[in-house]
Length: 302
Image (cartoon, rainbow, N blue to C red; front, side, top):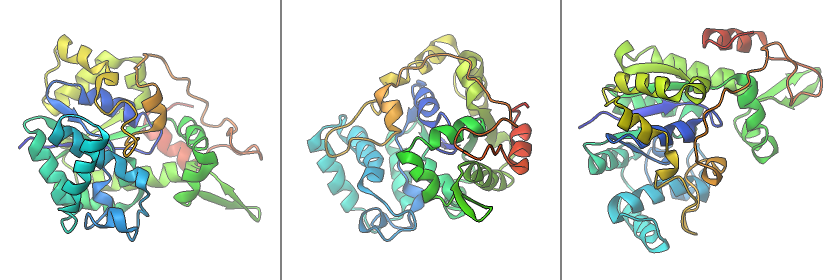
């Protein structure tokens, strides 16, 4: 069976867009956010007892995927079928369910990109334990731009949920740069175990500014076709069956911003100076030294 591709990245790091692009490759299948490796048993996605603290919206991806793969469409009725399909597997591990999905779409390469997986080293270890031979893409975005986008999610609610809080001067300030640093560090520690052939660092900004060149490099790394027809297919993530709002009982499964506008527009993202004041800090603070150092290692410049 073809080994899957796991895209490891924080939310708002071009994950939905790039996963959608890769999923349009003729030899690949781009999945929505399944979140399957955040649970030990599938039942935990429904009983609310997992560390991930599942909401109904975090189940939409697996529901839509099962509906699409096994029924060929996503309607209220096929999502209800997906509910029954998953209920019959509630005692299985998330890993076992993911393996079954990969078998169902074979020989296509599964492209998995759930941002929830990178929030815990435990989840990352589950992926590695199940798929030591898989491909692992470390996708990054400039820390200031990623943090600014995250702070617009539920008024900073995501950053708060992952305890990205800067305790300074007797204050507690929500600051997403802390999660950017610590989560990327978790990813890098996992990747130390991965052979060079199976891992690749990709800056999302490079894909945005040079899509054909960047996507061709990724395809060659994955052993997929890199001819112009395949590359042109990848420029249309909006054609993915998961690039739109789903039926009423499974609306999401991807970043809502992507679902509202999944069309890819090549552009050169503006990258702030690493020492510039942060837009979400009212005290004029900039990126911390350790964040700047990591950003430089990823190729972001002062």
